Image 1 (cartoon, one colour):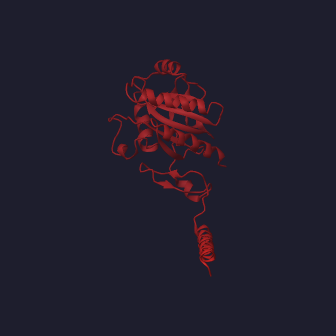
Image 2 (spheres, one colour):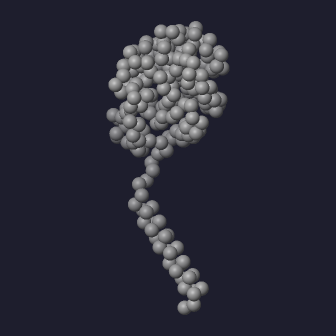
Image 3 (tube, helix red, strand yellow):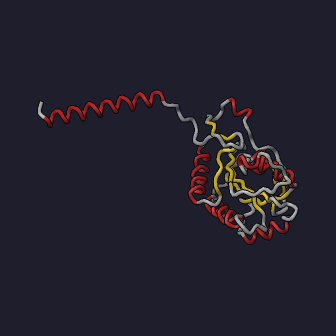
Length: 223
C-alpha cells in the first residue's frame, strides 16, 4: 500500500472511531429536560429538574408578601401571578451603585416593554425614608412605567427578610445578617411564574445583563 492510500485509510479509521465514540457519549449523556436550573439557597447551587418533578413540591419559592408601590397601590405575590419578574434592592438616596442599577433596570424595562408577562420589582432598603411620594418622584425622574416596574416600600423587617432569607440577594454574605445590618447589593434575581428562583445576575455588568435577558427568553418558552 503506497503512502497516499495508507494515509487515507488511517484518516478514515480515525473518523469512524470518532463517530462511534460520539454515538456512545450521546447514548449515555444526561438528557436536558428544561432550560434553566432552580435555586434553593444562598449558595446558588443549580438544581436541574423537569417541570412536574415531585421535588418541586417542597422546593424553595418566594413567600407571600405585602408591600406598596410608587402609585400607593398594594403589591403582593398575587401581583406577579403567572408572571416572570426580575427583583432587586435599592434606595432613592443612594449615591453609589443604585443610579447605575436603576439605569440598567430601565434598560430591561425597554427590552421587555411589549412583554406583558415580564415585570420588574425594586425594593427600597430604606423604607422609613422612601415613602410613596418619594418613590413616585423618583419613578418619574427615572422614567419608570408603573404597569411594568414596581418600586416598593413597606416594613423594613419584611423587606430585609425577603432580601436575605428568600431572594438570597446578597448570596452567602447575607446569611448571618438581620434587619439591623444594612442591605446593599448590585444583584438582580430572576423569578419564574411559580415564584421559583431561576438565576442571579450582576446588575452592573453588561454581559451578566445580556445573559439575564437571554434567560428570560428561555423562561418564556417553558410550558
